[in-house]
Image (cartoon, rainbow, N blue to C red; front, side, top):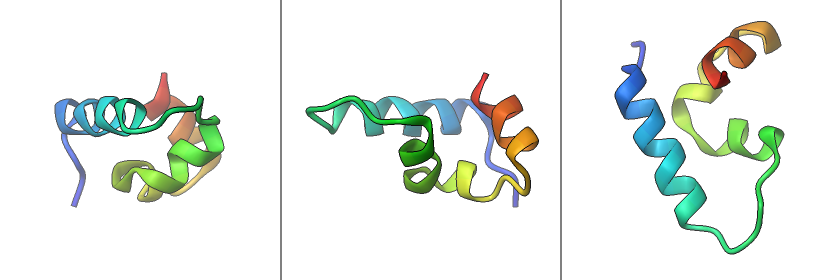
Length: 49
């Protein structure tokens, strides 16, 4: 099931607020459920923009 954009952005904000160091795009992709569901790198990049 696709996760709504607002929920994805909220999860991103919470993830970034919950860490004391910068996270790479790769680390974010592995930490946020909506990004895990992105099938390809292109799909992930479109979601991330």
